[in-house]
Image (tube, rainbow over all chains, first blue to last red; front, side, top):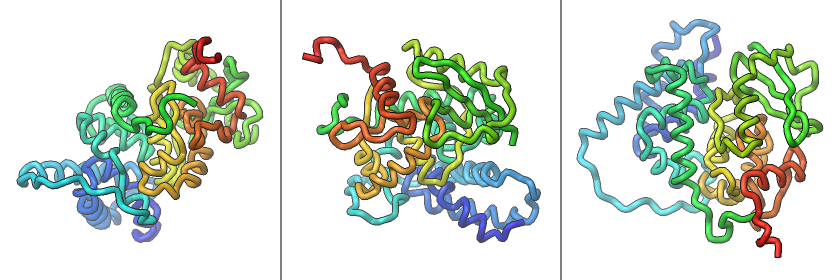
Length: 163
Length: 164
């Protein structure tokens, strides 16, 4: 078994992006920490040949649900949207409107898109994590992408639709 | 790991489809720069590719604008983020490397976006052909610029009137 620090190094960035996609920038760091804390405790019992990506996303999914429930119970703070930061050198610090576009998706679609495209999990594994059938997970991702295409990444003034 | 492959005809020449454990791992044109060596293609198993072949056929016939397939992707977190953004580019449209980089938080990432885009193994299905240079210029494409142009033309035919 690799040392746990190696797991964090190898999969940390992916899990962070998944957390950001599923719970949004405000909750993502906490969800990420909770995920790896739980993973650390469970790691000694993990089978040698286990699919670590799927295992981590399974834990992250549960933490995401916890985070969403906790956020729903807290009063909403009214605030302005943060400005786009100057270059921070950390691509994981800002997701533009991606979170807003994902937040507008039903939870199943958001999870299916994040787990398939950001974590690279097959739909059969995603179905095990979120419930439902493999086909339903695939359809959820396809529907989520369809909505993203209609709502996200609007063409900028210079680009328009032409080429 | 269970690598399989099949070949399928298309209007842009023969495509090589590679599968891994039932998911689609690669779509390559003939002569494509980063296609795998023949010994890395695994055993031929055309029956396993019925669904991707069907969907690609519908795409080339202009009847399908998005794919519903299990994809087997291998890349780091940044690559996957780029591929997700690319998948979110609407059919028939293009976006620039710069815009994708801005979405990722730093216009300076445009070149890295290009690198990740070039790492895409799933031509057409993950629509890396929809990413263009800042002025709409068709910059590189692993399958060649003629194919990139052909795919964009398939998705958004230029009406005859616009040529004049």
